[in-house]
Image 1: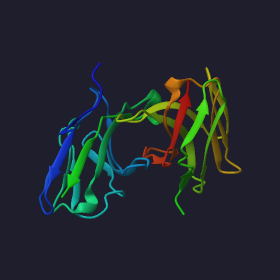
Image 2: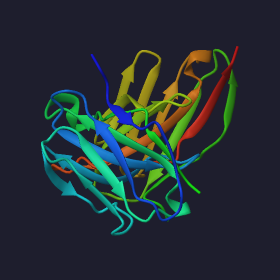
Image 3: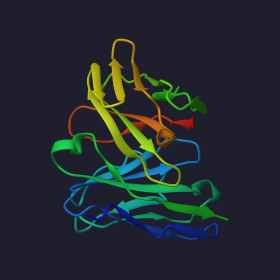
Image 4: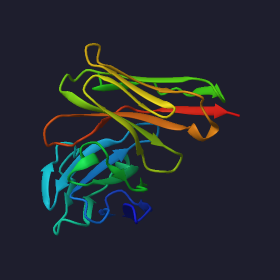
Length: 116
Length: 112
C-alpha cells in the first residue's frame, strides 16, 4: 500500500516568505508526527497529533511554526516569515493506534526546505 | 548535554565483520528503545525495538538495553554491503506520548 507522502519534495523560498508543507499519512493511521532533520543529525521532534487533536507541540521552535490536522488525516506544517536557520529536511511520520504503533513510526520522504 | 548521545562515526568495516553500534542516554523515563535504519535520501525505517532492559535477536541483528548504565547497543553479525546505511537509535517514555528522541545516527559502510 501507499506510504506516507509529503509535498513539495523541495522548496526554495526567500527569507520572510511563508511556507506550507503537506503530509498525507498512511490510510487509517491515527497518529501523525512532524520532525526536523538537519544534515548529519537525527530527526528532532516538532509536534504530533492523535486524530485531529494536537497532543504535543513542545518541539516547535517558536511561534512562527504551527501545524494543523483539521480532519484527522492530512496535516500542514506552516512556517511564517521564514529565516535561513529554518533550512532543513522536514519529515512527517504516522503510526497506527495499536500493535507496533507504540514504537513504529513510518516516515515519509521529507520536504527539503531551503531559505535564501 | 543531549538526552541521547550517539557516535556519528563514520564506521567502515569489511563484509562479514561484526558491527557494534551504541547509544547512551540520560533520561531515566525512557522505556522503549528502538533502532531505525536510514538509507541515503530516504526516511528512517524501524529495524528493531526493545521494551525496558534485555536482549532481542532478529536474524543477524541483536539489540541490547542496559537501563542501569543507560546504554543501548545494536550488533550486526555477518555484515553485508546492503547493511550500509545510517543507524539511528531512538527512545521514548511510557504512557501515551509517542514522541521519539533520536540520536544523531552512525554512518556505516560495509565494504565488499
